Length: 437
Image (cartoon, rainbow, N blue to C red; front, side, top):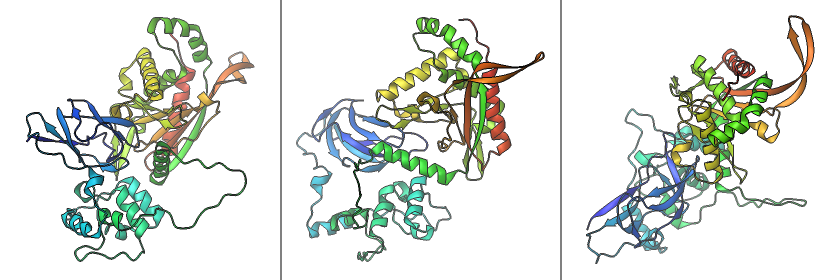
C-alpha cells in the first residue's frame, strides 16, 4: 500500500505555524491532485492546502482549530493501487480515549523533543511566544525549561499557553521529564486560560467576541510595539497639480486601461522613487545586522468588509509604471475584499503604505508592519487657503493639501533620515508633472 504524506507547506519566511480552519475532505473520501483538502489561517491570510497526490484520504492527524507548525505532516493519502482492504485509521478524536489506562499508552508513545540547549546554539523563540511570556511574567530561564512540541523542539503558542495556564498548580511530573506533555495535560483536566474570577459589566453593554483575524491583528500590533522603538515624523504636501491632473485624465484612463485611477498608486509611485534615493528605509533588522532589501515590495493596508485589516504586497514595485501600479493596487484590493488573496500575496513586503485619508482622517501614527522598519500614512486631501510665494510677492490661494506621516524604527533610522524621507515624498508629490495619456 502506497501512503503519501501531506505536509503543511511553508507560507512565507516569517510564518512558522498555521491554524486549521476546516477540513474539506473526510477520511475515506477520494481526492485528486491539487484538489483543496483543508482551509488554514495564518496571521497574514487565510488559504487552502491542495493535495499532493491522487487517491483516498487515509488519515487526518490534526483537528479544526489546532495550531500546526510548517513542514508538519497533517494528513496521509493512500494512492491508487494500494491495498483497499486496509481500513483507514480513525481520526484524531477517535484515537484518543478518555480512560486513565489509555493515558499511559499515549504518554509512552509521545516522542520527546530533542533538547535545543546545551549544544552551543541559542534556542529559537518566535516573537509571539516571547510576547506571551512577557505578558504572563515567564522569565527566560523558565521559558527554557518548557518542552517544545514544534519543529526541532521549538516552543509553540499552544505550549506556552498551556504552561501559563497550569503554572503553579500541583500537577504531578513524570519520572523522566520535569513537565507533563501537552497531550496528556489536555486529557487529565480541562485547561483554563483565564482565572476563575468572573468579570461583571455594569450598565447597558453588548459583549462581542473578537474574531480570529482581529486577535491575530492585535497580537501583531502589540508585538511590533514591543519590538521596535517607534518614532513618527510628519510633513504636508501641496498636491494641487496631482489632483487636477487626475481629475482631467481619470475617465480616459479608465476607458483605455479598464482600471480606476485612484490617489493610492500615485502616492506609491512617489514613495518608490524616494526609496531608491534612501535605501535604508527599505530594510529590516536581524539582531545587530541591517538587511537592506534590493527589491521594493510595497505593502498596501486594505480594509476588509468585516472591518479587519490586511496588507497585500505589490512585488517589485520599482519595475512598474503608473498603469502597472494602478492595476496591481486595484487587483489586490479587489482580491482582499472578496477573500481571494493567496498566501504569497501578503508575503515579502519591505515597506508599507496606508491611506487613512480614505476614511476622512487628516493624519495618523501607524504601527510598523514587522519585520519592516517604516510605514507611511497619507491623510485626506482638503482644500485650504495657503500662502504662495512668488518673485512678485506673496499671495493667498486655495490649494489641495495633504498630510503625510511616517512611523519608523528608531533603532536604525534616526530622526534626520526619517524626517528627510517623509519630506522627500512630499516634495515628489508637490513637483508632480502629469503626462498626457
